[in-house]
Length: 212
Ligand code: BG6
Ligand code: MG
Picture (cartoon, rainbow, N blue to C red):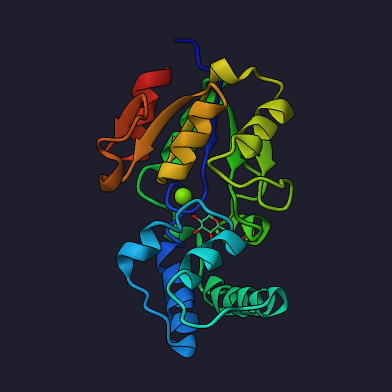
């Protein structure tokens, strides 16, 4: 396989923001009296903010209007963004810095393909806002993963065909999105060990063995 570009998911691949998302949704659920736990949280990985809220509200006893839903999503984002203030380069996941540096040295393009509208803030906080050749995020798309829109946009911005891209994902929705986009996909994270991804990585730097 010839890989000319690696498209990284952000949350859970480059940086560990998962706990912050979990804490913010936990607060909302508690305030609203809705059951929420790690298992339900797992279904929110890679899924947009509003769709995540819909998943949480499946267990609600009352019905929420569109207006109320928007307010809840907004509140969750405020809680989440408070946590993002603490984010720093030390929150980069193991092997990320070395992997990005080595890919660049070998002229492999690097991009972000994330569902998060907070991508610009997060990249700035972790000091990677100028590192990528292209960024496609939740602000650019109308269809969330498992739709391939965000990855296809990243590939277009890189000017590399999907078949020559490798996507790195920690979410099932993201693996499905990459497959739907006809891209190669490597999964990270214990829960994706038996997913449909082409490769499984214990840590991000293992992808270097695949592409170099
Ligand atoms: C994804 C996360 O990267 O971004 C999801 O895995 C999150 O958990 C989604 O819901 C949207 O994030 P944000 O920052 O736009 O609320
Ligand atoms: Mg992720």
